[in-house]
Image (cartoon, rainbow, N blue to C red; front, side, top):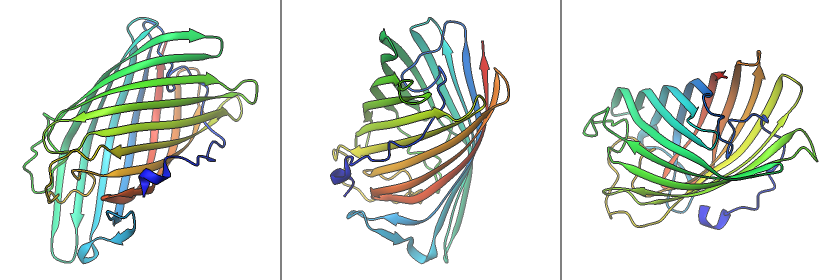
Length: 277
């Protein structure tokens, strides 16, 4: 189903802050963007292999409450290093069992490099590796699937100042997932706008499509968000406020729109941001 939904994207509506850390833009040398977010994810349904929403077995529910620290640092004006780490508490309970796990999750390390900068826009590439070394993949309810991922992505961003004070951003990538899971095609469409001098808004469509090259196996980990092969399209809607030139905060709502073989959930986020200049 998701493969057939590869975008009648009339959702290029309002959105996003025109800030240098967004999308394809790199940080200036010596500057950093920091974001600390608290996230609450809950799901009591799954997308089946036809894309239909089905209740989890035995009135099940899965929750993921986590803190995420994300940072971008400009090594040069053209090269920005990226890091992201989670501390999670996940829970899966139903009429027959309750399971909980907490601890550090996957770590993402990446590099974004600006290829071309032109009037109003930028073209960049990004490489990323997911590191699964901070948790036990053999837990009854694992924090991750315990394997390394490597991703390559191309990013294009452009100012929309000729229409309104904002920008658009487009990303397309491929993620190689070692061991059993299927590789993934990744794509993102983003539009953002300043609403006032201090308020801004952002909308993203964030999707992945399975390459369908994973091992034939049953996903029995108890964590419905890390199945072996799945498709997922999420909407990400954010409103932010700049407290001053350095500090700000954001509120974000991220529901699943459609998918196959994964959980149907939504994430609620509050984040504190800090721009080091």
